[in-house]
Image (tube, rainbow, N blue to C red; front, side, top):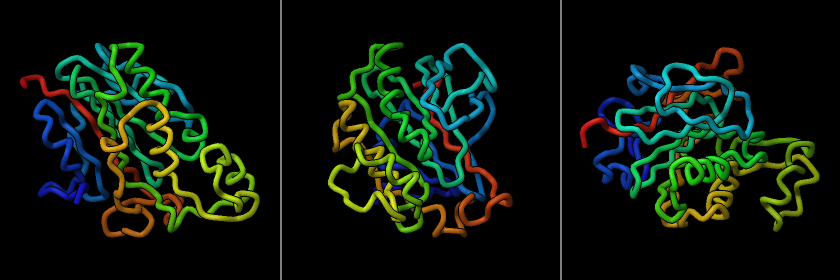
Amino acid sequence: MLFFKNAQQLYQVAPLEELGWLEHAFGTRHAGPEAAGLVTVQQIHSARVAVADGRQGKIGEADALIARLPGARVGVRTADCLPILLADERLRAVAAVHAGWRGTIGGIAQRAVAALAEAFGSRPEDLHAAIGPGIGSCCFEVGPEVAGQFTTLFPERRDLNRRTRLDLAEANRRQLVAAGVLPARIYCGAPCTVCMAEDFHSWRRDRDKAGRMLSVAGIRAQS
Protein backbone atom coordinates (compact mmCIF):
# COMPACT_ATOMS: atom_id res chain seq x y z
CA MET A 1 0.00 0.00 0.00
CA LEU A 2 1.19 3.51 -0.78
CA PHE A 3 -0.20 4.96 2.46
CA PHE A 4 0.57 3.22 5.73
CA LYS A 5 0.21 4.02 9.43
CA ASN A 6 3.47 3.96 11.35
CA ALA A 7 4.15 3.08 14.97
CA GLN A 8 3.49 6.70 16.01
CA GLN A 9 -0.06 6.54 14.54
CA LEU A 10 0.89 8.85 11.67
CA TYR A 11 0.23 8.14 8.00
CA GLN A 12 3.16 8.13 5.60
CA VAL A 13 3.74 7.36 1.93
CA ALA A 14 6.13 4.58 0.96
CA PRO A 15 7.87 6.34 -1.99
CA LEU A 16 8.54 9.45 0.11
CA GLU A 17 10.21 7.34 2.76
CA GLU A 18 12.92 6.62 0.20
CA LEU A 19 13.96 10.30 0.25
CA GLY A 20 16.30 10.21 3.24
CA TRP A 21 16.44 13.99 3.59
CA LEU A 22 12.65 14.36 3.77
CA GLU A 23 10.48 14.42 6.87
CA HIS A 24 6.82 13.84 6.11
CA ALA A 25 3.71 12.73 7.97
CA PHE A 26 -0.06 13.06 7.87
CA GLY A 27 -1.52 13.38 11.36
CA THR A 28 -4.45 11.49 12.85
CA ARG A 29 -6.84 12.18 15.72
CA HIS A 30 -4.45 10.26 17.96
CA ALA A 31 -1.13 11.87 17.04
CA GLY A 32 0.50 14.62 15.04
CA PRO A 33 4.00 15.39 13.85
CA GLU A 34 6.28 17.29 16.21
CA ALA A 35 5.20 20.95 16.23
CA ALA A 36 8.53 22.44 17.37
CA GLY A 37 10.01 24.74 14.75
CA LEU A 38 6.98 24.37 12.51
CA VAL A 39 5.92 27.18 10.17
CA THR A 40 2.17 27.49 9.51
CA VAL A 41 -0.32 30.00 8.14
CA GLN A 42 -3.82 31.21 8.89
CA GLN A 43 -5.69 29.10 6.35
CA ILE A 44 -8.37 31.01 4.45
CA HIS A 45 -9.41 28.65 1.59
CA SER A 46 -7.42 30.69 -0.92
CA ALA A 47 -4.82 30.08 -3.64
CA ARG A 48 -2.11 32.01 -1.78
CA VAL A 49 1.34 30.49 -1.21
CA ALA A 50 3.79 31.71 1.47
CA VAL A 51 7.57 31.24 1.53
CA ALA A 52 8.56 29.88 4.94
CA ASP A 53 12.37 29.98 4.74
CA GLY A 54 13.89 32.04 7.53
CA ARG A 55 10.56 32.55 9.30
CA GLN A 56 8.93 31.03 12.36
CA GLY A 57 5.46 30.37 13.73
CA LYS A 58 2.31 31.48 11.94
CA ILE A 59 3.35 33.79 9.10
CA GLY A 60 0.14 35.23 7.69
CA GLU A 61 -2.85 34.26 5.58
CA ALA A 62 -2.36 31.60 2.88
CA ASP A 63 -3.13 27.97 2.12
CA ALA A 64 0.25 26.62 1.10
CA LEU A 65 3.81 27.03 2.31
CA ILE A 66 7.10 26.29 0.58
CA ALA A 67 10.63 25.96 1.98
CA ARG A 68 14.13 24.91 0.97
CA LEU A 69 16.47 25.64 3.89
CA PRO A 70 17.79 22.62 5.83
CA GLY A 71 15.83 22.28 9.06
CA ALA A 72 12.73 24.00 7.65
CA ARG A 73 9.36 22.41 8.47
CA VAL A 74 6.00 23.48 7.04
CA GLY A 75 2.55 22.25 7.95
CA VAL A 76 -1.18 22.55 7.35
CA ARG A 77 -4.19 21.55 9.47
CA THR A 78 -7.21 19.78 8.01
CA ALA A 79 -10.45 18.01 8.91
CA ASP A 80 -11.85 16.81 5.53
CA CYS A 81 -9.94 19.23 3.28
CA LEU A 82 -6.97 17.61 1.57
CA PRO A 83 -3.43 17.97 2.87
CA ILE A 84 -1.00 17.74 -0.04
CA LEU A 85 2.75 17.42 0.50
CA LEU A 86 5.23 18.17 -2.29
CA ALA A 87 8.92 17.26 -2.35
CA ASP A 88 11.54 18.23 -4.93
CA GLU A 89 14.00 15.33 -4.96
CA ARG A 90 16.62 17.31 -6.91
CA LEU A 91 16.71 20.57 -4.96
CA ARG A 92 15.40 19.24 -1.62
CA ALA A 93 12.54 21.71 -1.40
CA VAL A 94 9.12 21.04 0.09
CA ALA A 95 5.57 22.36 0.16
CA ALA A 96 2.54 21.76 2.36
CA VAL A 97 -0.84 22.54 0.81
CA HIS A 98 -4.36 22.87 2.27
CA ALA A 99 -6.85 22.09 -0.50
CA GLY A 100 -10.54 22.34 0.26
CA TRP A 101 -13.04 22.68 -2.53
CA ARG A 102 -12.56 26.44 -2.72
CA GLY A 103 -8.79 26.12 -2.83
CA THR A 104 -9.10 23.40 -5.43
CA ILE A 105 -11.22 25.65 -7.65
CA GLY A 106 -8.60 28.35 -7.15
CA GLY A 107 -5.82 25.98 -8.22
CA ILE A 108 -3.89 25.96 -4.93
CA ALA A 109 -1.92 22.80 -5.82
CA GLN A 110 -0.87 24.27 -9.16
CA ARG A 111 0.07 27.53 -7.47
CA ALA A 112 2.31 25.63 -5.05
CA VAL A 113 4.11 23.96 -7.97
CA ALA A 114 4.53 27.34 -9.65
CA ALA A 115 5.76 28.95 -6.41
CA LEU A 116 8.43 26.25 -5.98
CA ALA A 117 9.61 27.01 -9.52
CA GLU A 118 9.56 30.78 -9.02
CA ALA A 119 11.27 30.80 -5.62
CA PHE A 120 13.74 27.93 -5.92
CA GLY A 121 13.93 26.83 -9.55
CA SER A 122 12.07 23.57 -9.01
CA ARG A 123 11.08 21.60 -12.10
CA PRO A 124 7.66 19.91 -12.00
CA GLU A 125 9.15 16.64 -13.25
CA ASP A 126 11.37 16.49 -10.16
CA LEU A 127 8.45 16.74 -7.75
CA HIS A 128 6.71 14.06 -5.75
CA ALA A 129 3.15 14.83 -4.59
CA ALA A 130 1.24 12.98 -1.89
CA ILE A 131 -2.49 13.72 -1.55
CA GLY A 132 -3.25 12.81 2.04
CA PRO A 133 -6.34 11.79 4.01
CA GLY A 134 -9.41 13.90 3.30
CA ILE A 135 -13.07 13.58 2.45
CA GLY A 136 -13.55 10.94 -0.24
CA SER A 137 -15.93 10.90 -3.16
CA CYS A 138 -17.94 8.38 -1.11
CA CYS A 139 -18.89 11.17 1.31
CA PHE A 140 -18.41 14.50 -0.48
CA GLU A 141 -21.94 15.19 -1.68
CA VAL A 142 -22.57 18.79 -2.76
CA GLY A 143 -25.27 20.88 -4.39
CA PRO A 144 -25.18 22.31 -7.92
CA GLU A 145 -23.83 25.65 -6.66
CA VAL A 146 -20.59 23.86 -5.74
CA ALA A 147 -20.59 21.05 -8.30
CA GLY A 148 -21.09 23.51 -11.15
CA GLN A 149 -17.74 25.11 -10.39
CA PHE A 150 -15.96 21.85 -11.24
CA THR A 151 -17.00 21.64 -14.90
CA THR A 152 -13.52 22.57 -16.15
CA LEU A 153 -11.87 19.95 -13.94
CA PHE A 154 -14.42 17.25 -14.85
CA PRO A 155 -15.46 18.05 -18.44
CA GLU A 156 -16.66 14.48 -18.98
CA ARG A 157 -19.35 14.74 -16.30
CA ARG A 158 -22.95 15.63 -17.10
CA ASP A 159 -24.29 15.62 -13.54
CA LEU A 160 -22.66 18.77 -12.17
CA ASN A 161 -25.87 20.79 -12.54
CA ARG A 162 -27.52 18.88 -9.70
CA ARG A 163 -26.71 17.38 -6.32
CA THR A 164 -23.88 14.91 -6.77
CA ARG A 165 -20.62 13.61 -5.34
CA LEU A 166 -17.17 15.02 -6.12
CA ASP A 167 -13.69 13.51 -5.92
CA LEU A 168 -11.43 16.26 -4.57
CA ALA A 169 -8.35 14.06 -4.69
CA GLU A 170 -8.89 13.35 -8.38
CA ALA A 171 -9.50 17.05 -9.07
CA ASN A 172 -6.17 17.92 -7.45
CA ARG A 173 -4.41 15.02 -9.17
CA ARG A 174 -5.56 16.39 -12.53
CA GLN A 175 -4.34 19.87 -11.61
CA LEU A 176 -0.94 18.54 -10.57
CA VAL A 177 -0.63 16.68 -13.88
CA ALA A 178 -1.60 19.86 -15.72
CA ALA A 179 1.15 21.66 -13.76
CA GLY A 180 3.71 19.18 -15.09
CA VAL A 181 4.04 16.72 -12.20
CA LEU A 182 4.54 13.20 -13.52
CA PRO A 183 1.45 11.01 -12.93
CA ALA A 184 3.62 8.20 -11.53
CA ARG A 185 4.86 10.59 -8.84
CA ILE A 186 1.41 11.64 -7.62
CA TYR A 187 0.37 9.39 -4.75
CA CYS A 188 -3.36 8.99 -4.14
CA GLY A 189 -5.50 6.47 -2.30
CA ALA A 190 -5.36 7.90 1.22
CA PRO A 191 -8.23 7.03 3.61
CA CYS A 192 -11.46 9.01 3.77
CA THR A 193 -11.62 11.14 6.91
CA VAL A 194 -15.40 10.89 7.15
CA CYS A 195 -15.51 7.10 6.91
CA MET A 196 -12.64 6.41 9.30
CA ALA A 197 -13.84 7.97 12.53
CA GLU A 198 -11.40 5.83 14.51
CA ASP A 199 -8.44 7.58 12.88
CA PHE A 200 -9.54 11.02 11.72
CA HIS A 201 -11.38 14.17 12.67
CA SER A 202 -14.07 15.20 10.18
CA TRP A 203 -15.88 18.51 10.03
CA ARG A 204 -18.63 17.06 7.84
CA ARG A 205 -19.23 14.23 10.30
CA ASP A 206 -18.71 16.04 13.62
CA ARG A 207 -19.22 19.71 12.72
CA ASP A 208 -18.10 22.08 15.50
CA LYS A 209 -16.88 19.17 17.61
CA ALA A 210 -14.26 18.25 15.02
CA GLY A 211 -10.60 18.73 15.80
CA ARG A 212 -7.88 19.19 13.21
CA MET A 213 -5.06 16.96 11.95
CA LEU A 214 -1.57 18.33 11.34
CA SER A 215 0.37 17.30 8.23
CA VAL A 216 4.03 18.26 7.82
CA ALA A 217 6.82 18.27 5.26
CA GLY A 218 10.35 19.11 6.35
CA ILE A 219 13.98 19.10 5.29
CA ARG A 220 16.21 17.28 7.73
CA ALA A 221 19.00 19.50 9.06
CA GLN A 222 21.52 16.68 8.66
CA SER A 223 21.09 14.52 5.57
